[in-house]
Length: 98
Picture 1: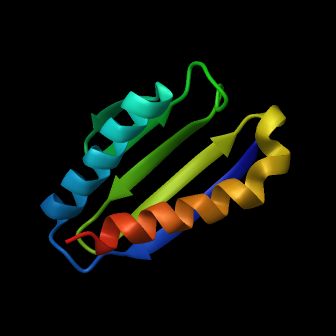
Picture 2: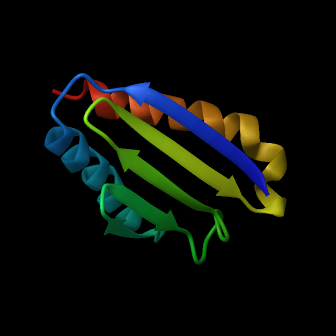
């Protein structure tokens, strides 16, 4: 599997960052059928079907930063640069959101 690991400081309260991560997970659930659940301060996600089938990941929210880790299945390995770029954009937008 191809792995992506992104760490970004958030400059807000941990609760605010956690709410924003959950909002993003809810949108992914509605649009892409992604399943998600909280395990402590880590939001775990997986795509059981659709174009991202087999993709797994997590969003760990700490008091200082948000870390996204994604494991892409073999069929999406060639798309890694595009997926990583999109994740950076989405994370930046999530952390900028007023």
